[in-house]
Length: 116
Image 1 (tube, rainbow, N blue to C red):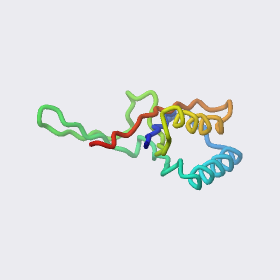
Image 2 (image 1 turned 135 degrees about the vertical axis):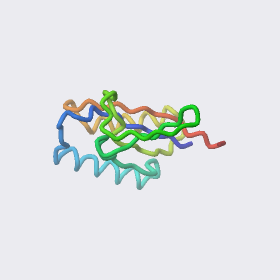
Image 3 (image 1 turned 30 degrees about the vertical axis):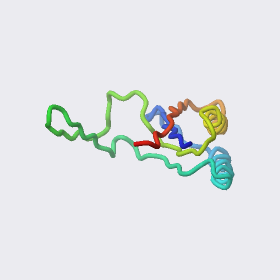
Image 4 (image 1 turned 90 degrees about the vertical axis):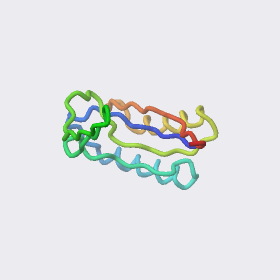
């Protein structure tokens, strides 16, 4: 089964990853890529560089970022291959544990519907 982990962060804290966090994350990414449980991952550029397109009543509108109504934003994602939701939760726990006590991070974990 495949799962998408949407990584939510508070965007405007100014917090930067430490060298230790980057090294620990690099090791975790290498390990989980090698064992086949991490299929892909990436961080996202700030909402100030993004756009939103909406369709409502047949009309499309485009809004420029930043999106001030968003308290937390999707800062990245991870595509996981796991045997079950419990296994995917264990993989996500490892990702969160790497961040230590100084970060506020939330992951929304959703199974991908392979039948669409």
